Image (cartoon, rainbow, N blue to C red):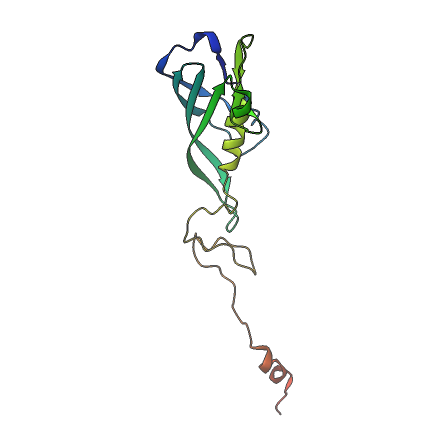
Length: 166
């Protein structure tokens, strides 16, 4: 969990840095997340409002959709969170948290988790030049040509295979 003690945040700018395990963010079930996530929080408190910019860095373990090989994918993202006492500002916003006089801690884990999940690419491709798999034998064409005999015949000439000569 990533929580902030409201009373411990002082006026002005400060920063915090931490390494977080995927399990702490509720990402333990996602096989893509198997490395620690480096988080740097830049905190700026102005009056009753607190602005937190969290920079996230990690490496995802993905499987290519084209050749099925595993590859590493570096992610750098940032999440902006506002802690405010203004209920109108917090209404309907995901990354704006309402703080009252009795609030002692704010948990921003869900904002961080959602941002990281959105960083997983929709089309996972190990490289832009990935050749994929042979449709006949399934060999990875990135590692070399396959041994299949490519005897594709134009279907318009297929009938000629049936002609017998004496």
